[in-house]
Length: 125
Image 1: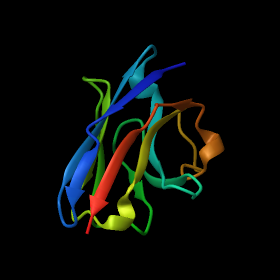
Image 2: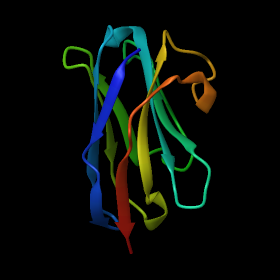
Image 3: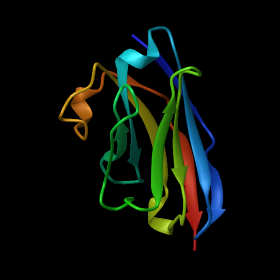
């Protein structure tokens, strides 16, 4: 198991930028593919972005492509989500997730068995 703690959420106006961080502990971080999901009020949790163990490949939901960037620093056991041009519809609780060794099903919730507690992001119009 790996323990995940998100930080960096907050309130920002539409068009603003924010960087989320997810710090991992407990196991070898670079054995895990990492991802961000989000859940808006009254909606199901959805995939946002994923990154492979080395950081060499990234994947994005269409709704955030070109605006969000996922990255990782294996020396710091941390994965990031840089959010630019934030829209009101980006408002959600953002969760960090880890999958041991990674999977082609990177956008599927049940692939991940390690989750953080979430951090709230609110984009106002």
